[in-house]
Length: 306
Image 1 (cartoon, helix red, strand yellow):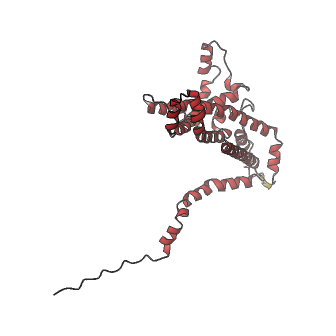
Image 2: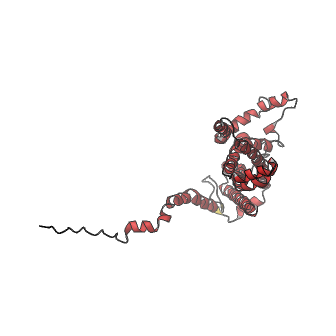
Image 3: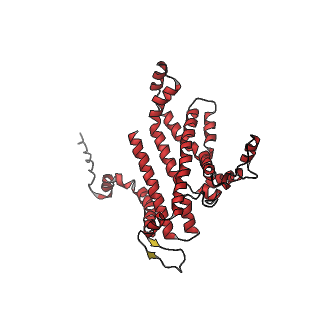
């Protein structure tokens, strides 16, 4: 007696519609949504509030009522000699620190790219300044630059040179602060350039060695052209960061002596927390943001033309 084969039920087709179907269609928007919301909450909303605040004459004191002044704060800033002095010092500090960081970072990256013993340990030691707390770095360098007890003056005297006032000299304070920034952030430049060096193919260098190219020719015609994207990335990051440097300047000099090291960021801080002019401070910070954005866009345009 033969039994009839049992028929297996056909698989069910997924029901169209519902949350799963919507999620599949919009997955490219769902995943970035938390990051976009966090960006809006932490960046865009404070920026919008700062723009609104910059159009008002407001103080932190409840005794002084706030009033709408439109572009009055910006007009006052453009007529403020202290504002223009702070902008000049900001670019002076950046113009000294960033080019030196690029040169020293390039040399350090070329050195670290060579095969050496304990290369991992050497790279870790080189990166130590970058991971140090800026306030601690500023305090240590302030002690080193003390005119009477600082170790830097001890070295100058051991070389037969005279003592330097460092941070107390209005002519030397900006270069002295740029020296601290150079020490702390050159490792970041070298790290970015080292990453660019280690991603280069070996074939062009082998062909250059076979053709008898000198080390300078290899660097000029092979290494540097392929390293330019990494160099522009490092340059952009350092320009943005140097233009808005605040911590080491405020800790080491508070903008002094006088206003000899009062960059725009420091001036805005003192205006807001000492003179309590909140609306004018918001306008200064907006102008700082515009300046940094223009510099970043200019570097990007230069990179495209290179």
